[in-house]
Length: 288
Image 1 (cartoon, rainbow, N blue to C red):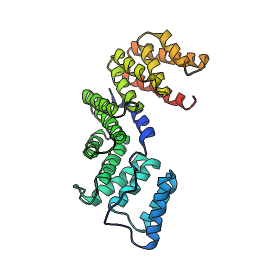
Image 2 (cartoon, rainbow, N blue to C red):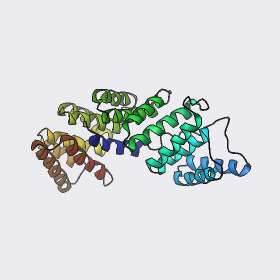
Image 3 (spheres, rainbow, N blue to C red):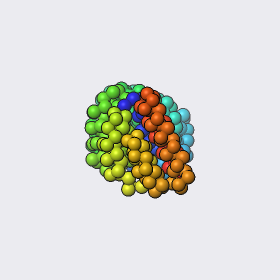
Image 4 (cartoon, rainbow, N blue to C red):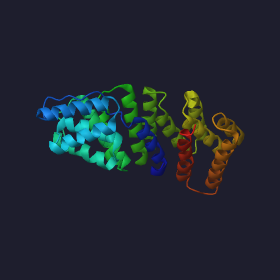
């Protein structure tokens, strides 16, 4: 599986798990902002964050950091909120600043804070195309015991990084581990299915997507239709599409998938063609 194929999976994981590292309020016994005004600002930022008002929380953290540079766990808090609303390059800089502040051993951080820091670095590095850096940071995050959903997201991201590095079999192990923790995690299911499709093992991709098709994720169902088209079963693909789409629109999607098959049969790169075809389900999901 090439980097271009994995790009779709990265979009999916960011959309599904972008706020996963926020968690409960982080606590640390040192490097706290000083002064009453700073304490009130920190309290407000946390209230906004915990109520899902992440853009507002980011602005409060940003102003606080400008007036009194945040350190340690408080900087990790700020970076974690920024990760949900700001570009990857900007958030990577904040997480990297936190890493340099706490040192390589992260001695001043608790387990939750270490996982948030390493996971945030890994997610941002992956978004920036630095798979090697992402793999290292995600392994760091996984060294901390967390809840099953959080570990599933980290394992899925790790699989994406490993696939980008050409470690395809290892990547599938990571996707499978993610699904073992969270069987309904559609990003990992899609990643694993695309991996099998890219290697030409359509039966495994079809079996995996068929087993997950009743989960309500339209992207999984449409990727199943794509897999059936690539396997030459256009009538089955049409029936699957018409379960979720109007017949005329289903016919348009089927035609696109058939064109993808023709280009692959004509020698077009499989990975790039799968990426182009698989981007369509993500667009359709918002219309359903």
